Amino acid sequence: MPTTRLVGVELRKMFDTRAGFWLMASVGIVSVLATAAVIIWAPDEAITQNTFSTAIGMPLSVVLPIIAILSVTGEYSQRTGLTTYTLVPWRGRVMAAKVVATLIVGVAAMFVALAVGALGNVVGSAITGLDAVWDITLSQFGNIVLANVLGMLMGFMLGVLFRSSAGAIVGYFVYSLVLPVAFGTLAAFQEWFRDLQPWVDVNFAVTRLFDQTMTAEYWQQLGVSTLVWLWIPLAIGLRAILRAEVK
Image (cartoon, rainbow, N blue to C red; front, side, top):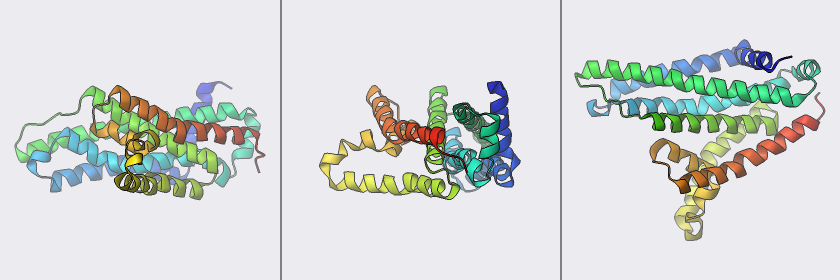
C-alpha cells in the first residue's frame, strides 16, 4: 500500500466523523469571526494585516492541536485501531501518515487564515477609507506557520502519549495554560530561573516566533525546549504504540 494512499486515508479520517468535520470547519469559521471582530471593534489605525493575523491565530492555536490529538486518539476512542493495524501491520507507517496528514492540515489552515485575513484587511481599509497596511513579511509568515505546526505536533505528541481524547486535551490545556503561568511566576520571583526559562519553557520559546526577530540564540533555545517537551516524549509515545497491544 503506497504512502500517498495512507496519507489520503488519514486525511479522510479527519473529516469523516461529525467532530472531525466541525473541527475542520471551525478553522474557516473562527477565521471569519475573528476578522469580523477586528473590522467592527478595532480602531482605524489597527486595521493592518498583522492585527488580522494575530486575531485569527489565537483561536487557531487552540483548534489545530485538538485536530492533531483526535487524529491519533480516534483510533482508540472509536476502536478503529484493530482494523487500521490489521490492514497495515507496521504501525510506524500509519503514524508517519498521520504526522504528514497533520502537517498538511496545519499548513493549509494557515494559508486559509492568511487569505481570510488579507480579505479582511482589504474590506476593513475600504470601510475606514485608509490605505491597506501589509505589515507581514514572508519570513514572519513562515515563523507563524512554524509556531502553529509546532503546536499541532505538541497536540499530536500528547495524543500519542495518552491515547485518550479527554486525557490528551486536558494535558494540552495544562501545557498551554498552566505551565506558562507557573514558569512565568517562577521567573518573576527567582532570579536563577530567569535566564534558564527560555531553555526549558517551550511556550516562551515558541511565542517568540510570533512577535520577535529570531536570533541564533533564540533558535537554539527553541531547539532545546522542543527537544525536552516535544521530541523526547514523542519518541517515548511512539515506542509504546509500536509495542503495546491494541484492544
